[in-house]
Structure formats: C-alpha cells, structure tokens
Length: 346
Image (cartoon, rainbow, N blue to C red; front, side, top):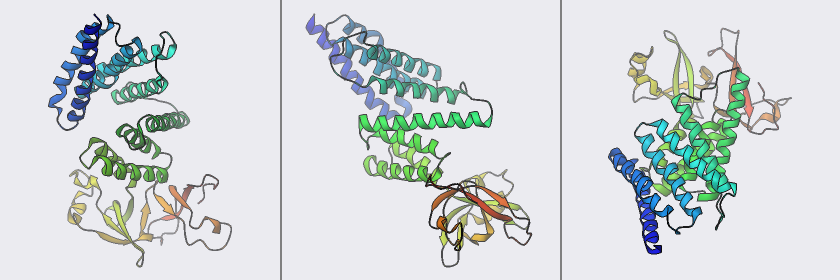
C-alpha cells in the first residue's frame, strides 16, 4: 500500500511539473490550452483522490498540491479559454486550502508562507472581477482616490513578497513589479518610469525579448515613458504629438504623430498621414505639456522659488494665459516634486 501511495504521489508531482511547461508554452501557442485542461482535470479527479487514501505524502503536501493545481493550472487554463468565472472559482478553492494550512487545523512538518499565497490568490480574484466588470467602484472622487491608494499598497506588497519568495530577478517578481509600476503611474510618473525601465531592462537581459514577461514589461515601459505635447495649428486648433527628442541648442522638441494617428476617424488623421515617418521640430515654448510629464526645473531667477531649480517632478495641471500673444496660451504649470518634503508649486 505504501509503494502504491508513493507511485501515485510521484505521478502527481511529475504531472504538475509537466503542467508548468504547458503553461509556459501557452504564452506562445494557445493550442496547448485543451491539453492543459485535460491533464489538470485528470490530476484533480483521478490522481489526487489516490494519494488522499495513502500515508504519503504528508497531509500538508497533499493540501499544497491541490491548492497549487487550482491556483496555477485550473485557473490559468480556464482564463485562457475565456471562462473567467471558472478561473475565479479555482483560485477561491486554492485560497480556502491555504487558509486551512495557515489555521493550524493540521500539523505542519515544514514552514511555508501561506499568508503570502493567500494574498496572491486574493489579488488574482480582485483583478479578474475588475476585468469582468463585477467590481467597478462608483462614488465620489475622494472615494476613488482612496481605492487607488489601497490597490497601490496591495500591489507594492505583492511585489515585495514575490521578490522575497522567488528572488528579485525571477519571472513572478518582475511580473508583480510591472503590475506595481502600472498602478504607480497614476500617483508618481517619475517613480513609475524608473521602475518600469529597470524591470524591462532586467527582463530582456534575463529572459530575452520574446518572453511573455518581457512583452508585458515593454508595454508598461512604453506607456509610462511616453511624453506627449499639444501644439496649436492654424486650421486644426490644438493637435497632439509624441515627443521623441529635444534639441538643446535650439530648444526644440522633435515630434511625431501619436499611435492614434492610424485611426482614420481621428479629426487630424489626414494631417498626421502627411507626417508619417517624419519628425517635426517645434520650439519648446510653442508646446503644451500633457498633464502628467516628468520634468526638471531650471532657469528660475534668485528669489523665493530659486531652490526649486534642478529638482525633479511631474506636471499635474497648467494655467491658461490671458495674454493672446502667448504662443501656447499656457501661463504656468503646477509641479508635484519627487521630494515629498517639497510642496507642489506653480
């Protein structure tokens, strides 16, 4: 009986390892989804019941195997197949099993951070509910800001746990870090850009450019590092461009059409079409920065604001000028500084 239990245990462990390979393969070829679902259900319905009747492995490992199967495989293949409710149900079951392990209901032979696993499971559930539109928060602006703070803190904590448990340069840690950088963008562009840049470079170096983690990191890096401005056009009003460079000597921005220029219904599509593949150099003082752009303050004369020179921050709002001779109608920007000891300043 003991030998049969050992064989069943080894079959479960080997099949779980094979599922890890299938999940990685699915990022490149989704044709493996059905095979992954079949093997997951085979483990759940045929192999796990066999080891439940055996003395091997210990009860702690039996619960871990079932929890990991639900959290990493059953949920993954269900989500890939578009069955989000089944994916959430699987992770909820995993969370329940981890809660049993942390409750002291069974003796633990070895140490594991089940609190972290519960936190990861809950984060997945919350994220999936949001994507399904089942967890949309409505209310006043203050309530929304408070919700964003909670999400940001939870994302930061998950990133820290992933680094601690898997290592700073592991795929889980970089993936959680990318999620954190994405959320961080709403509260601190400067910090978000720095983190997204670091994670993107680390992922390219470690996993290569074709890995799914690198692909995700690149998307957030491009989003956080994008800088756009608006320029007055004599016939089109205010037209938006992406900034790709700065000529220091001429104090001009190099501008290109934004990605939205490909939309034929865009009001300035025909104008952008003429500029595809070209960079337009426009004096900086003719450009209106978008509301959130990293900046370095310089050129302030001696006086009460002089100490802000060389400080790093980001634009939050801008004031409109009543002087019609101003080329961009902007009189000032409100800057939020990276140094939290510095107050926001116009």
